[in-house]
Amino acid sequence: MIRTPLRPLARILSARQAGQDPDEIEAELRARRHAEIQDRARRRAEGRIKWMVLGFMLAFGTVGLRMGTLASSQPTEPRTHASGAQIISQRADIVDRRGRVLATNLSTHALYAHPQDLVDPATAAAKLAKIFPDLDAERLKRDLTGERKFVWIKKKLSPEQMQAVHDIGEPGLVFGPREMRLYPNGNLASHILGGSQFGAEGVSSAEVLGMAGVEKAFDGWLRDPANAGAPLQLSIDLTAQAAMEEVLANGMKVMNAKGATGILMEVASGEIVAMASLPDFDPNDRPKPLLKGDPSDSPLFNRAVQGQYELGSTFKIFPVAQAIDEGLINVNTMINASSPMKIGKYLIHDFHNYGRDLSVKDVIGKSSNVATVRIAQMLGPERQQQFLKELGFFEPTPIEMTEAPTGKPIVPRRWPAVTAATVSFGHGLAASPLHLAAAYATIANDGRRVRPTLVHRKEPVQGEQVLSPRAAAAARDLLRYVVTKGTARQAEVPGYQVGGKTGTADKPRPGGGYYKNRNVSTFAAIYPADRPVYVLVVTLDEPKVSVAGGGELRTAGATAAPVAAALVERLSPMLGLRPDDVKLPVIEPRPADAVRISAR
Image (cartoon, rainbow, N blue to C red):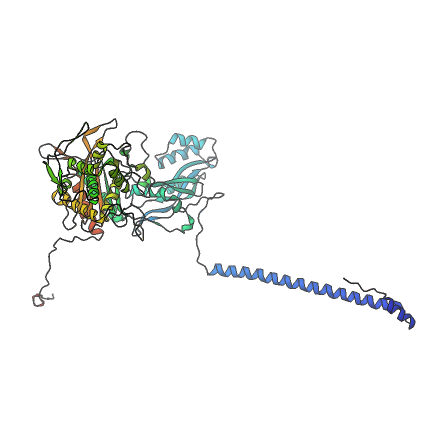
């Protein structure tokens, strides 16, 4: 800044020459300088006031805009959190394909105690033991009368139990809000849903975690707030599931079976419409797992997914379909069925002696082991293995359940000629009924691979082509022949053109060899055979039916096949599949003159 002097020399000299006082010049310039300083200070203060006013206007405008936005929005409840901890207590519902609830949440309360606040701890312990008989009265008394400052009593209370605790009148008994998982249909679809348990817990909330089934497989998705509470929609139909479990339970009782499994799957999509394993359990009160013995003795064991069974003659359609595809045979090719057949030191027999030659149609219809082995020998072990791999028999099913990896098929490590022979008729390779259902669905789907799923999809996922449509169609015709003329005649349901294959396999002993009087009976079906919509697999564990004369029948044709027929008859109408060749009575309208109207 250039500063003007208060006594400029030029003006001083001029003033002296004119006889003026130079001090007046200095006073004038000083007054002018002071006026300029005051003007600058005033302008600076005015600028600051303007910016401050503008700032206040922006701040109040923002607050007003936010208040207006909140006033015009819809109110929402915040998620429940425990004090001091991030415990998300909300979990998405699980629904069936029609939106009906399979699993949901229920607001309830937990009960805990502050022993130091109890007036009479011993009496409180005695009264609580009466309300909750499952509690250890002596231990509860020790906890409430000891040095502990906090005691959990019950993690979930019913309204009646809560009122009974209220009536005790103890200030040291405290209720904490809790959200629990509820399965309103009880045992229905229990193995699919699996169940849940509490994870991280606080006095005001608890984390609900899946512990089995789809609850565990989709645990992260069900707890993810980003899904905004959208339900998980499964592929199962609640009505069909209930009907399947009822029919299976009756069939299991009539056939005196240890257990039963049923799977109904859509051919085009691989979606499972119903899947049951009996005995089952209530996921609201999930039992404890067995620590020893046979896992299949536990109701928690999912036979459809975890069961590893030799599925017997249901496998015979696979080498036959493959050989047709390779051009090695057709349905009329004659096969040597002379029994017994020797491979190395082993003899292979048929249930009946079918004579010298059988057509391929009768090989499947009569279920000849020997003739099936001869067809498998045409293919060779390597091609046989590759086809079974493509059908999914060497890997766990991709079903969305945590139990799926435990159901990986038991496949022989070596594949000599005798193994190739026994596998061709369903022995030596153990797989789950779900594996079998997926493989039959592939045949029904014109040879295109079908992978089972429990999630309801808008668009089906197309699999790879593992069998030609021509061979798949021939295989379907053979399966239909089994029901009309072969071993599965009891599976026929008028109007639905059921096609399928029976399979009866002896159960292996834990120490080696096979039981002579215990088997697994299976019937795998597709229907309608000419335009397949569904695949149905029924497996009975150790069935036996008493017959006149004191004997017993254990074959799949007499046990699993009639149960499957009952399921087709029961399930198809409720799923909208009408019979196509049943002639319904025609009701002719009466002529108008034959109708009389009377009033009384």
